Image 1 (cartoon, rainbow, N blue to C red):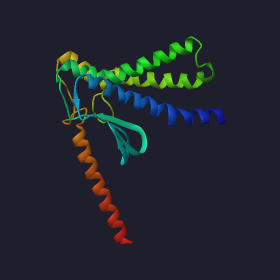
Image 2: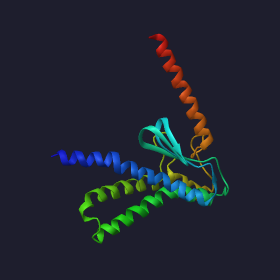
Image 3: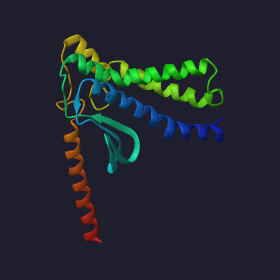
Image 4: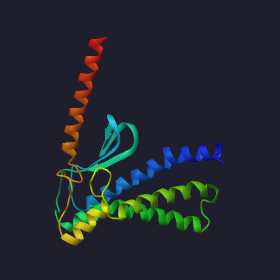
Length: 193
């Protein structure tokens, strides 16, 4: 039976563990891309209006399950660089999950075992859905598909015409345009009242 303890566990999973795992996943892009000299990297956390920016972080107002990494250009524009960048989220979640699992197996963090088991579950969940080549709901390939296509055909294959990792400058321009549209709608609503 689903009780109060389960509700608390679900809340912790949804609002603490899942966002942290997603942040770590997106940080995987950043860590690996730094090795290949990306220009203007940005890690956007959440959606909607911007709350603040700090260094490479762009924090938005609404729930941060939806996050993404962007950059404008890369110094090492070779297939190997892109394979490594797209493998970054897979590797970092796998690495962290295995480290936590090893710590639990050796008796560390016993009092928080349920929390860490959930953390490992979500980390492996993202590894699984990143590593198996497939298209996502919007028709774009996931990281596994991008890596597979790069290894098989030797080129970046995108099933949409837009790039897989957007440029930070392009994202900023789109954001500013959305904010202008929101302001216009607000003004129209105020005039109608």
